[in-house]
Length: 368
Image 1: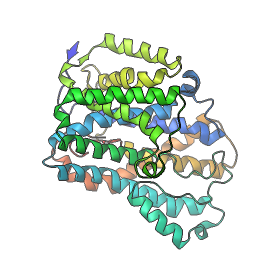
Image 2 (image 1 turned 90 degrees about the vertical axis):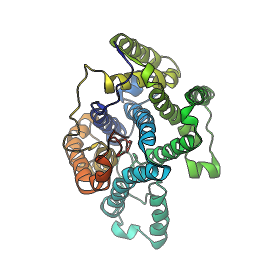
Image 3 (image 1 turned 120 degrees about the vertical axis):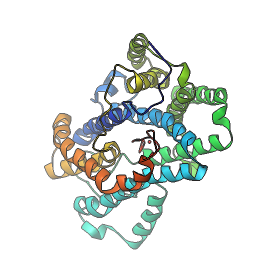
């Protein structure tokens, strides 16, 4: 049994991020290849509660909550903290969106470049800056999932707002009052349960446009907060194989119980993530030896899969789409890291620690 989480860089978080990014790609193969996620493995097993892709995103947010608080503590100032966050999220994101808009959309639209107007360009420019993706013109109209160019971008603004949330908690001194943060976590889980149990669909109106869909916040905020709480209580955690087995059993049982995943993700899944990240017998420490490719894989998987389906021209099996799209997606992730992301993270990489979603995606002070 290991008591407390070791505070060093020899962890498996980079490997887990790669696995999670590929899991998102795999999960998307079902709706993109067939037009429905009804046969997606976890969707079937959990009786419609969650897909593997949704679970992977939740895990990204749990890891991010853990690592971003760590990054806050190691930052010289609020300004340096936010600069690291901006450098980690924006460069890769902006290039990926530009590729989608100026390369993918003209290829997949029947109107080619004529699909753009000055109004569309100006509106999308503002959406780029605010991390809200882009308004999709007519593209992929014959695909099983039409008009969707990059369905993975929805999580990016939620991630960035979480960065700002950590900043506010840190500036207000609440990160030094861990019981307060724990109380916020418990309240957020309760809110999520009520939203799911009562099948509420709060719209958010104007605030929803700025901060994101409230029902999505009900799901993601507990994930981020549990990561934060795990970091704040890290010296008390026991990384024990027996507890890991209990967590696996708990997750399996919760998946079969209505609304069980509301409680399973911020408890059983969160424990398993930290266990897999830091237990001394699990050694995947060299996953990012040549770079951190998980963010790029996450950003480019969806449009690559849609292009595959566009050129194939008819529905195929999800496993066929996975086999076809994985190699070019990994290549895109490598290129994103080598040509874009690493140039903005180099100075931070000389310091220490690992970071997140973009964190989804990596390293110490350099960033997730």
